Image 1 (spheres, rainbow, N blue to C red):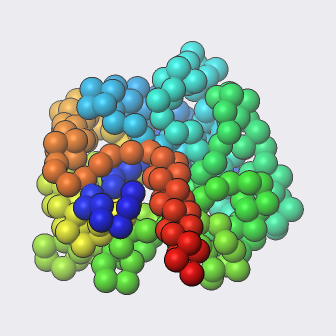
Image 2: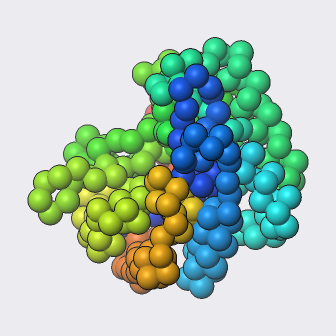
Length: 304
């Protein structure tokens, strides 16, 4: 990754968490919708994860898997060999129980001591299951504050990927330190951008599965980003359960499930064939970026 490189880098990330999960008033952890049942389900997550990993293998794409630790435990208990299935991919942390850290819905913001306890436990669970270091973090609902950032920095995470930033003239997809939270930890942000009508979009693919967007709009966004964000990282994110159920937990019919699969495959196949981009894991991008910047610093020192 050098200054004369002409590539846009693209990462596929998965938020692997309970089916149709949502925050609940008065409690920190999430439940599956409808929350009145008071349950957590991972059936759609399991099927969606299996299908998504299958497609990633078909197109030879390495991805970043943000596991909620509780979900990982439930999937293992249900017979999934997650270490084998995730072997080629990066394993990162997506909380313990998809907690509402900031209390936006629960009304109960978590104190820093509780944040440290739950995130430590999540990291330990994932490292025990997968037998490797967990370096990346994405917060539930992609909401962080200074306390969350302090905790993940203390726990040795190498990057966060929770922020959403407008891709354009001011930010071109590069890592940046979370200075607004008085931290040096690097952010690999999710991009937002405008569609052909000037309406804001994000790189989360939920809008496709909810029937609000077409898969071609996301391919067009990458084509646009390829021209303005050389050396930057364009991060996509998917909830595997969304292939099979909607945000309210209602199962899709067979035709809609097939349409969701086809839309996901359309995006992956077009990204794989696209000239001028390279697909990689988020940790691989970070390693390459850090190596490039060390080389630039060494060159500046030798010239001084």
